[in-house]
Image 1 (cartoon, rainbow, N blue to C red):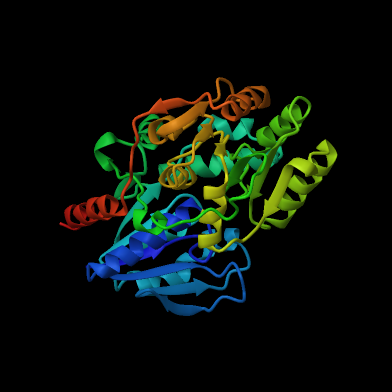
Image 2: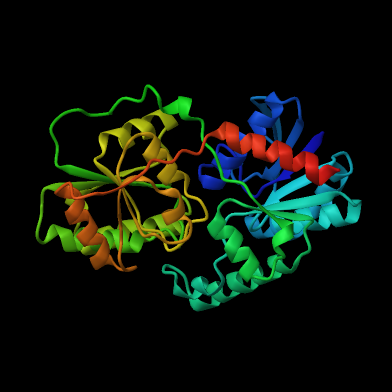
Length: 365
């Protein structure tokens, strides 16, 4: 079997989607499936073509994600003819993958991570015009008749059905992680320290960082003995500058330590050295950050939105409302050790790969 993956971003870009497809494509190669990833060359220092752990990666030199969305189908056509399946993902890669599949009569499937619908209009850090355009683009993508849809959680599957996708065209496959990567992780600092929270993940308007920063400000007025490890990339640059400016304006620099672009082993060590992870997202289709924190036995404060209540297990606290005050109250409970405990769940990569293999065999026949 030969599968062409069309992705907006891929490794070494870091994020939940990138983690899913890096793990999946490398595992498929181990099963002797020929895999090629076509993605955008978001960083000009990256090679146009290379092979990483058996996966051929081709990066198309478009200036930005929007040109990739509307023009990438042209070079994709010559590649698509050589493959049995095209596998793409929401959002920006879906359109060129669909067009290339349509023109070459190659069956095209799409993994949907989240469907936001009206949530677009409640998100911070963006203007109404942009949010309206994103909302309309999501509607447009959901109108394209892909051969099949992969939902990464029951929450996402339900959202797809609510958006009008027929249930028999949706398969739920949870994302998975390689738990062997977490077995020997050591804390980065075992010295006595204030109670330490950690937020780690990409910069996105749905991630609730505005709630976190405001909650830190509120908590700092009653408790000075805590800190937050904020692990975020420096891209998009404008968004990063906005976060730094907000930290300065709130005058909470003494409580926040910012890290960017950490090697994965160092990130694991920093998570292990923290007392609790915070995931205040407005929506999550799956949430690798939660699963990784759970693998490192770190308690989680979360919003309960999207798939978070479905995925998060072990010691946890769920925000009662989507506001900074509710998050602050959870942080106070965490400091006193007042956790809710749920039976632990795991999401092994092997289970995910096996489910994808069964899916590919069925969809190809």
